[in-house]
Image (cartoon, rainbow, N blue to C red; front, side, top):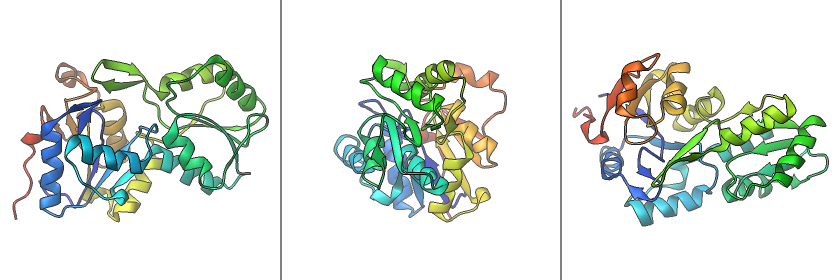
Length: 257
């Protein structure tokens, strides 16, 4: 198929938790061999781009540039900068999210922050949820890095950032601003980074509700691979079909011209 650029999900598409998806690795190698531009676009905010780059190289035999990795953490930082409010934030999240925000001019504030930012946090406790709730009710801008209710791991589907957002939305009656897939905010930035128009790009991912919906909602071609979140038996009942559905990325046929 002929596309000028590929927007590619990571977890469930290129790997699954700590497990390799060899066909995903091979897919990236083929893109590199053909000098086709690509951007790894992930809703995962637990790792920094530097950590993702190292992980891909060490665990999954993929050597890629730092510029080819764009996370929901970076998209969140860009969005906050665009809003231009006071640079104070209370963040529920892990290293990838906190590094992106607090290493780029923002100050942590648990009393009266301008922003409450929520991503996946595997050390979450009631105290953090209480601080976030009070801050949101006091007027802080409520930002969710991504809406993923679950994340695919080698153990199965575990709670994602979206589950934490649901708790805080119920507690505050305030709907968060979502940055990650399927929202236009992160997709528009990805296209800008790649320097292509929507008609020339394709989104590749395993999650219909985030990756593929991002493509469909934003007028971009889509390729669903059933190696992660969305299972083969679910594809017959999808409300809007992706442009392509594959059991494995090894089935993808590149234009050989």
